[in-house]
Length: 284
Image 1 (cartoon, rainbow, N blue to C red):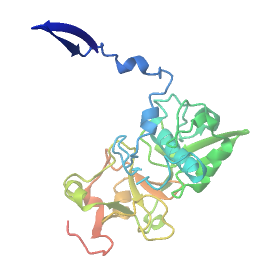
Image 2: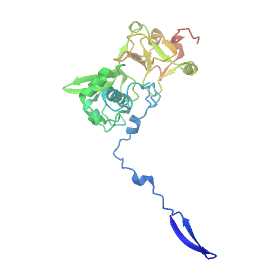
Image 3: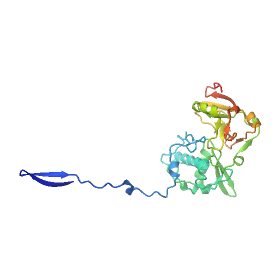
Image 4: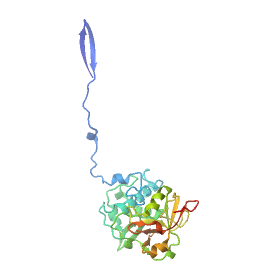
C-alpha cells in the first residue's frame, strides 16, 4: 500500500492505492523429488486391480479395501500394505523394474528388498525385513505367494495372475490331465459382463490366463480364483475342453488357469451358466 496527498480547493486529501507485488510461482517452493521412483505414485493408488484389466487392478482387482494400506504404517496395516505391493510387483511390474524373474515366476527376495519403492502404508520397501515378507506370505488369505529356498538363497513368486510375459506357463503351473482332477471348474463374473461374454467368450485380457475356481464362493476350501460378490457363475465343460486340446493348469493356491485358444475360452465350452447365489439357470 502507498499513499499520496492532493489539494483540491484548498482542502488536502490523502489518496491510497494498493501496491501490487509480482506473483511468485509455487514451483519455487517445491522440493526436488527426482529420486522418487516412477512407480511410487502407482503404489500409492487407492485402487488395485485384477482380471487382466491392464493395470487397472480394481479387484485386484485386486476389493483390496480392507486389506490394510494407508493407516499409520504399523501392525496389520504394515503387513497388508506390503502384501499388496508384492502382488503388483510380482504379477505385473517385474520387467519395468528390471527384476530378474525366472520362467517359473521366482525372483530373489534380496533383489526385491532393494527396490526404491514405498508400500501403500508409505513405508519404504527397503526398510522391510525377510521376516516381514514371510509374514505377508503367511497372512495372505488367498495364498497369492510361494517362497522357495535354493542353495541358501530365498526366492518369492506370485502363484498366478501374471501379465509379465517372462513367465512360462509350463514352469509356473501344474498341468491338468483329466476332468476327474477338477470336478468343479467355474468362472465367476457379473450380469453386466454376460452379454459381452456370450458374444465373444471368456478372454484372458492382458493376463496370461483365464481364471477359474475349483469350487463355489461359499465353499470353505476355495481360497482364490473368484470374488465373493460375483452374481453369475459360468461352468466349464472340462472334458470337452481337454478333448479338444485346450490346456488347463492348477496353481499352487488351487486356481484353475487356461490360455484357451488364442487367449479365448469360447462359449461352446460352457457347460452351464447360473445366477448366484440363487443358482437359477441362465439360458445361452
